[in-house]
Image 1: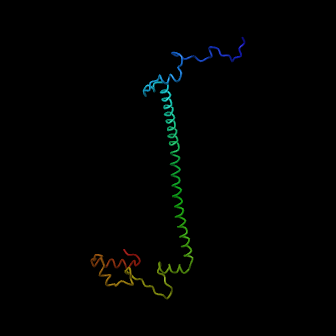
Image 2: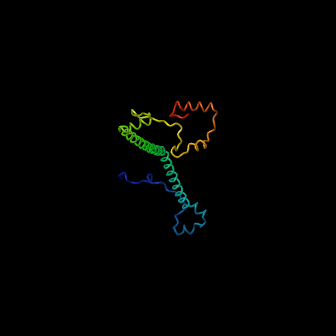
Image 3: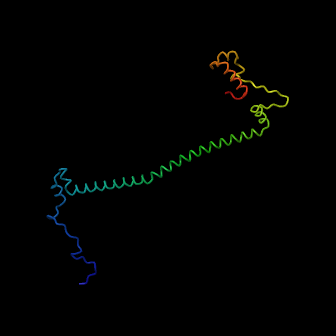
Length: 182
């Protein structure tokens, strides 16, 4: 006999499982199985149920481990992204503030180009006068000079009275530096 390589001999067959007897019909198995919950789990149905439960548990554990791995992997990246977005927002705010400062300085530069403004500032800050004009400097002016009565201002003065020698010293200091009160 010539073999073509496809014949199945007894050695290529899977081994048979030992059985106690012939397989029972499905109707007899259902009636023979007791209807107790603990006994149902020890049979083939219990093994299938526990195998399915084990499979779900394994899948859940694998899924949770993948999620945990992704959180660890992406956590630092997301934190860096959020930090960089905050830095960008702070830098944009800083740029806006600097642009406002630049525009204010440009406006002031334009004011200084006006000769009338320069003259006003020279008169105010440096006490410059034109030839023939007289300059008067008022010392110790009241905060609201036009409306306050000088006698009432002196009567309501809450500063402690100084000894005469200290009052003389303060007046000489004020006379030496009229713009600066010490």
